[in-house]
Image (cartoon, rainbow, N blue to C red):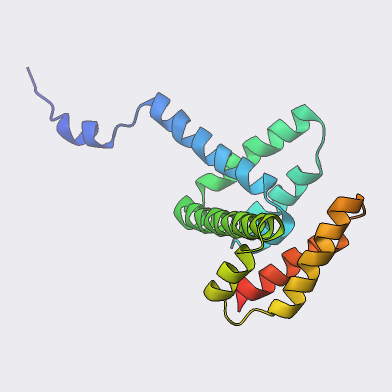
Length: 168
């Protein structure tokens, strides 16, 4: 009776379930690309065929057609190394997380400045290059707007001045 060496075959064998899972992951990556805003999608380097398929999927509204197009994108993703795309997506997510944190910081400062007179002193110590005169005027006008239930023009101006101060 002949014996066969199965160790080489076992190393190369990948179960059908594992293959399907890998293909679904690639398809999900394609879905993420389809749902990205245009500016962010343009920042990711993609093969021309994949970019065309993504553009076509964005225009589709019918569920069945869109599902088939997403499957095609998943199929096209098999021919592409997905790691650079995943890295670029992760970098984009990191940028938006930083932008969201910056936004929250600005909103917190604006709230503190409008609620507390001493907050301007604290802000001036942390950001000595800020235009304090313009900021003080905008804060005073924003408080008047809030008291009079007027449109929040100065309220937005405080936010803009804070953004400029934190950027410099």
